[in-house]
Image 1 (tube, rainbow, N blue to C red):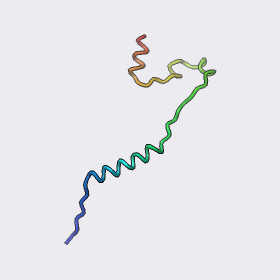
Image 2 (cartoon, one colour):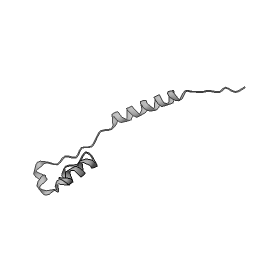
Image 3 (cartoon, one colour):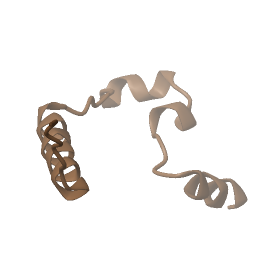
Image 4 (tube, rainbow, N blue to C red):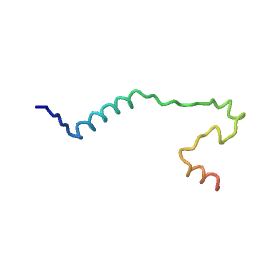
Length: 62
């Protein structure tokens, strides 16, 4: 006679979610900063990064 072990998919998904939240907490976002003195030597579009493609399109239409 063999034993069969079954588990609920909810248990697997819950443990995966816990692992993902641990990973998210350990990631530090990288931020690039440029001093105001250096702005004169750079192109406006390369210094200020847009939050979305739509905002770039709106800015270019002006």
